[in-house]
Length: 385
Image (cartoon, rainbow, N blue to C red; front, side, top):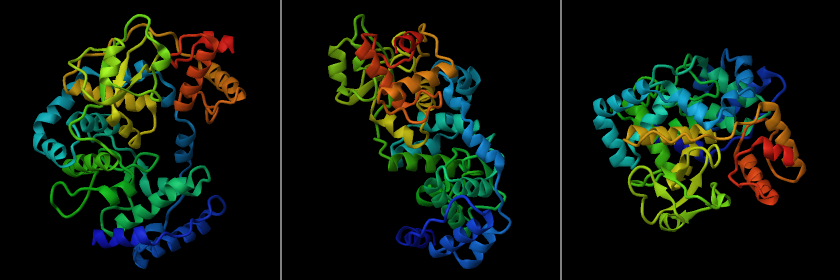
């Protein structure tokens, strides 16, 4: 049944429903799309009946303040001795499931435990937004309809498979279950880990863990390879070599004086140097698997924190926090982004968030101005601009 549903969904793309405008008319258009995508007529009607927009979803979408936290603030707020202890205990008690994830999909248990911990506190807090209404609200909103309209269709397909209840709750952006996956990922890459014939990420630990592993494998996770390693950089290091845009082999980094804090570096792999808070903060070597994690979450701070926590779960030492320069205040970050944009840099939205585009622009301007080019925005840089 699932294979047949997927075959129809993949071969019958529907015309996108118009965003904005009357919500009732939008629901009718989406229902027609669902039927065209293979959902039985009665199931499609049942799915859309009684749906309504949720203004709290739009409010959450517009105010993602968590992404403005620094790496040190964010990681110290999420990683505690208790959470680390719980993760290691789960690794032991669910060893058979994590062993399957490692054997079948090549994904380390540390990564799966880190996301499980951060997304839902090991399944305890899965979100209280009605998932159907959240997805329809975001699909109707004109900011990102191309992302969320396919998620609505996937949720309706799951409903037709008896794997999505209309009362299902989750995160404001429509993620479901213990590891918070979107409906399309569940439909296409979900795993029936407990063998009950259904894929239920809200209630089955095996389904959630193995589905998360399969999703990472699909996005390019490389079995048996590390993802992040804390390093120490030598005096006089060329800071312009840091950032995800520069890759060298571990042997080349070693020749430049890069040394690991936890065991040897993985031989023969390409890697980049990450300085989440500049040259005076923690330093990491990011391997190819690190980049795959952005398919789970787009936030640099979130992904780096999850990757670091995964290394801690598997025995790494706590990072050397250092003494980074103070972060810019929100209004200062926006002012910096405006200046960078005026200079021709693509920093995306002026939102005060230190995203990839802003980091790249900061580093280029630091090089131009003769400042340490570590990608960390400081008041000195703002003043110089």
